[in-house]
Amino acid sequence: MIILIAAVAENFALGKNNDLLWHLPNDFKRFKEITSGHYIIMGRKTFESFPKPLPNRTHIIISRQKEYKKEGCIVVENLQKAIGACPKDENIFVIGGGEIYSQSIQLADQLDITRVHHSFDADVYFPEINMNIWELTSEKFNPKDEKHHFDYTFQTYTRKK
Image 1 (cartoon, helix red, strand yellow):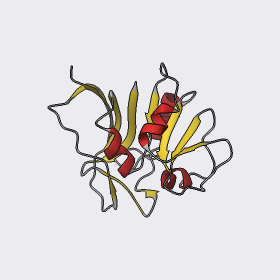
Image 2 (cartoon, helix red, strand yellow; image 1 turned 60 degrees about the vertical axis):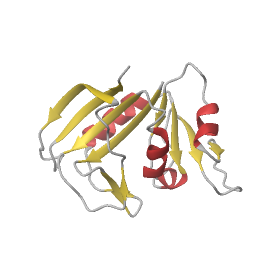
Image 3 (cartoon, one colour; image 1 turned 180 degrees about the vertical axis):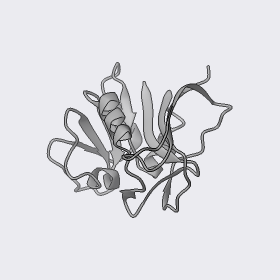
Image 4 (tube, one colour; image 1 turned 45 degrees about the vertical axis):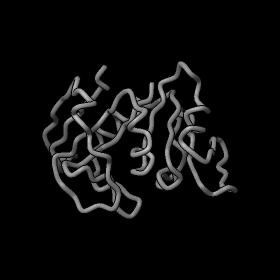
């Protein structure tokens, strides 16, 4: 199963200047719980936004740079090769950035979205979720608090049959 996982603002903003626009500790915790032990596919810029590779995950990095290499990671030149590098019975998580989300949403079986209830100025956006294709199957609202400056909702969408 191919699953896109992202924190997305009301206006579909994802980030700016290769950085996140908000800090939601519970979203990071959820991301870690969902993706640990699995393959994660990302673009090179997304990978380089991390201080180090994420523990307990197999990293597949998509890069057009032919000589790009990162120790302990699989580097490929396109989405099809990234998916092909994963075991067939494995849940595969696409974790960004915007261009990789746009390419992979047509192939995805599920979307795990943290909807941040605010709009932001951004330079990277998540593709719009077409409700003719996707069905919202679960959601849990979380109010802002001292550690979370915005209200947010954990949402799961599944592809309609």
